[in-house]
View 1 (cartoon, rainbow, N blue to C red):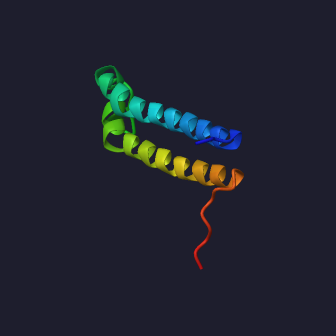
View 2 (cartoon, helix red, strand yellow; view 1 turned 30 degrees about the horizontal axis):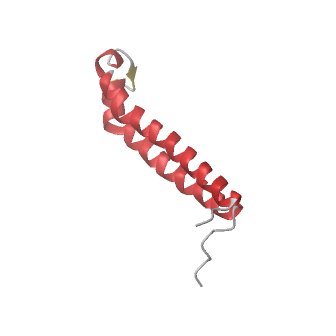
View 3 (cartoon, rainbow, N blue to C red; view 1 turned 90 degrees about the vertical axis):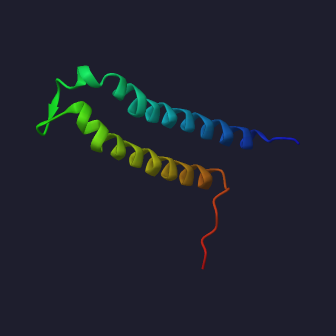
Length: 88
């Protein structure tokens, strides 16, 4: 199967954004937890940063990652002419 340059560019942009967002997910899932004890010294709203990130911060970041991926992919789909049509 022959892949056009436009299709290759679309796929490269998709893979790049997926890798960046997965790296952000990895940092907030594993790296923050690994440094939980040193982060306990930083207090936000009366709670240690490690507790805040575990209880609320990471969940907010996950939602932002999902929202940004959806927003980015919709824009990319429109740019490359592969967007889904609106249902009537």
